[in-house]
Amino acid sequence: MNLTIENILLVGSLLLFASIIAGKTSYKFGVPTLILFLSIGMLAGSEGVGGIMFDDPKIAQFIGIVSLNFILFSGGLDTNWNSIKPVLKEGIALSTLGVFLTAISIGSFVYFITDFTIYESMLLGSIVSSTDAAAVFSVLRSKNLALKTNLRPTLELESGSNDPMAYVLTLAFLMLVINQDQSIYSIIPLFLQQMTIGCLAGFLFGKLSKLIINKIKLDFEGLYPVLTIALMFITFSATDFIGGNGFLAIYICAVFLGNQDLIHKKTIIKMYDGLAWLMQIVLFLTLGLLVFPSQIIPIAGVGLLISLFLIIIARPVGVFISLIFFKMKLRRRFYISWVGLRGAVPIVFATYPLIAGVEKANMIFNIVFFISVTSILIQGTTLSVFAKWLNVGLPEKIQTERDKFLSDFPKTAMKELEITSNCYAVNKKIVDLGFPKNAIIALIKRNNKYLTPNGSTVIEPHDVLVILSENQEGLELVNNCLNKAIA
Image (cartoon, rainbow, N blue to C red; front, side, top):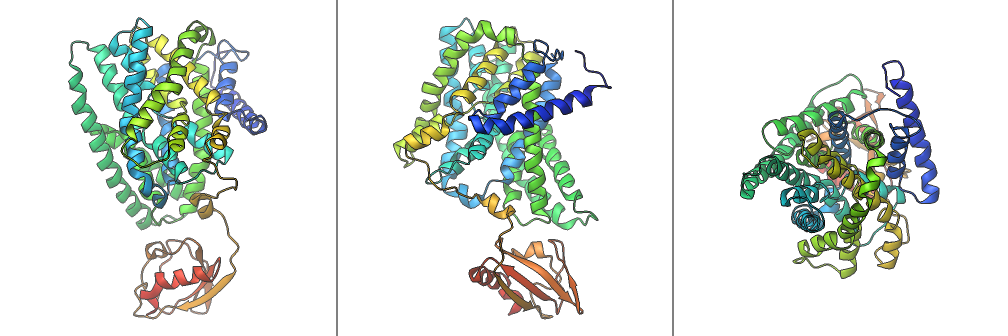
């Protein structure tokens, strides 16, 4: 079936609805939702019952890049700095050296078992070298896995920050495949440029975005998430334009923003949470439509060999060597090795050889698709089992910092504070005061009238703040926060 303007919305909405319903039922049977999204896309595709003809890798790549922007930005917003700070070095080692070693290991294996050239082999290895943020975030959060000793922050930090390394390696080896007369050393300047500019741009755009969000005065609360989307795409495209890694920049920018006091922060995070799920569904549906199942069957044998080598050898080698200088229990290293899920990101990266017209691009795409599917099926369905076997799981349900921030805790303590004319807080916005997250300013009494404040509300002299907190300890934190204001 060919999509037209008349039926594209109907077909799209039906696929979206089917994916959501399938995702809901999948929890009961322990099947990762991402596999169902892919399956629905394949069923609706040209060789499925839907008969939708879609074979445009450029459109798929565009949808993939846009989706990854939202997924990585949402993951960055959810990343609590206090949680990742103790494991920052480990996370960086995994997302750089670990990815590089995995790519080299897989590339070498592919070279020995196929007729690929060394550069084509390394290109395939680079494409599947990083864990997938969408897959890891989705599986960990849907299963609500509680893990010991900063293990979960390590995994989420790695999956959110290692795509840029895989992206740079993919571009570098794609360049070598196309221009085989170039030296392999020519990729080093590209790597340094992409990573350095990406890091600096992400931090600078993060600071600029915070300033814009908190200083600009919009008439409607719903415009703040829209403003954040605009800033996200500006960060990505501007960084890419000046030669940096856009994916790295938006992740760093989002981590910075997620740990700052922002106006309407809850609204922004909730919106991104929903959009990240939408983008995951759209991305996997699109990639499911793009693949031809009849082309997957002939490469199933070699695809399974590469997938098993990746899971059993390449990923553990990358993890153990990159973490060799860190103190960490052996069972934690084994579990990190097992949570090496591949998902949509490698499939999106596999569209680059297709667009570039590489001779074996079709075979590379189909192998990568097969690896991603088997990785989610084998590893995604067994994360809980391995956590139990390796004794790295916690029996109780742990509430993340993000969940705590978004939830409405019952407030059991109240206090009124009057702001004097010489207070530090006078003429300052609430968002700039660094107010504790477990307490709120419920009301402001001003000129015998009660106002309902938000982050952009400016404190005025003689305001009476009605403070609500979870407990008495929360009120003490408020006192510490406002001690300059009430001194």
